[in-house]
Image (cartoon, rainbow, N blue to C red; front, side, top):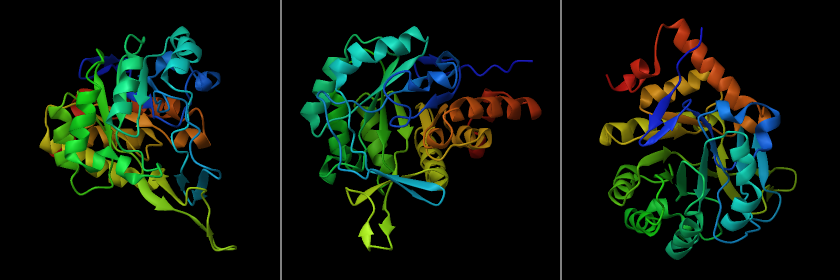
Length: 302
């Protein structure tokens, strides 16, 4: 017996609510050796700028218990090279593709969006919230006005724009509202939580960038709260939940909080098959409870 997992995020129709998360599954078909990319809702790429970018100095990743702290710094080949070298392999696998873009200022976001025009993708995820840039003033999602400006700057795109927001702000609801007003069709909640790791043997920060973003199971409650509060504030706006999801149960919790779809990120580093496992576990949970996606959507608000 199969379970119908089809869902929609606004105008984007997906085979499943389970997607990969930006920054955790590469730029192309790197995960194809572990599962059928066409079975997932979508593959979300690592964030791409209008130019090639080396990122932060090493070390870039550290483990802290069940959590991970990373400061990769958005390294990547740039949109043009990605379209030539990586996108064809994703499409040949039958994957639905969501391309993540970033910039250090509004003009660079606009340039990345312009370079993405015409790409064979279903949506663009505007990364307004990476905490791993040297200049934290570039975290647009800490400012409603700046978030509004960068969403306006990406209006050249004909595909839906999703905006990835930060939990590192007390103004999430207002910032989400500014993004929606500027044309964001969906909210992606959330990015990593600010943190760091220290080597107690030498007394120095572990990461080359000193601080970084905390991800993994520890941030699931943070992401759930962000999804729940934004769903309450914006009942009709599509939401993609991301942060700490590593099981079907976690995905169920995200959907009950109000997420239309769910991204699986850090769990993929420990097990590259994690997105497919989460998808199977979600389907089993629904069958076991005699439920459908529609019947559990937003249940925490009842």
